[in-house]
Length: 350
Image 1: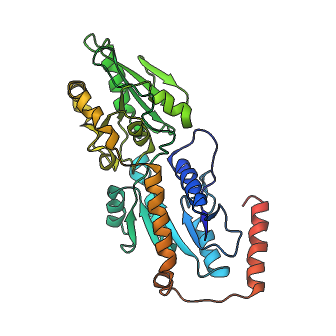
Image 2: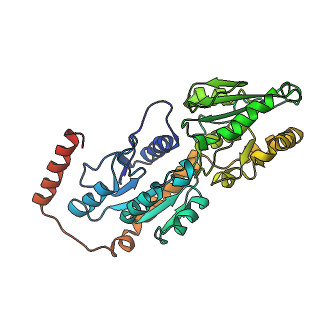
Image 3: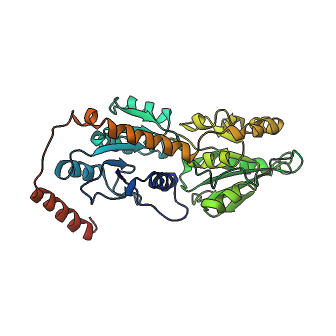
């Protein structure tokens, strides 16, 4: 089987979509599945669209290119569309409409949370062949090895990390936490570390700021702390709190987007209005909360296994997905023209 994952993989700190592609590619290769990141071969069995917007650096191909591939090269290819983005996350007004249109080329849609699925269903995405597969981080890197829980004596060390610097990533929460540390009754009780990029207009006073990290360096830095916090708004899933949880840190999570689906049994829910009382609740129940973290289920291996089983099922039942489309046959000349045009455009950076 040959699968094309539509992600331009980046080295070093990037984002959750990049980590998804890295982890899935490694898993599939170990299952003896050939993985490519383009549409240059005639014998691709499954195309996984991860980012159809050509303006994104991570996009290896768009839904328009997939449609042309289906039309001119291989009408038996199956198309899966993974959705992990929405307007609500960054306050934009065009993403949902674009992704709903891009989704028309797909035989199967995958959402990273039930919240995101219901959001798109309410806005008109096709209702058939939709599935939720929860995200996960690489447990070979993000695990509780060498993590030391809070002893109820030293300062409670709180941490979060984000690649993106959008305000909705939780900066209202993080500024409130920064102000809280200035208060006499809190400054000797807690500390806060932020790992990643920060909006230019955000100025912290009491926060330990660390430049973006990835892999083991990131995991090691997270493990120096005791509690993970995420104030991210309308997050479809979010790799950051998953990585924190896999390292053994209980989570303080805001009730927004798909985040509660990942965190509801592994920490304390809060709103910005009750941040202080929620912190007190965490500190009073920390030992119990932390003792439950070994049950955290969302790992990369679990996620990848679900994708693998889905790909196998799609392949076995391809007739069901393809019969709704008009069958076409293409001559060698038509395919040659397609690849000539494709290579010409690629060489010109189109």
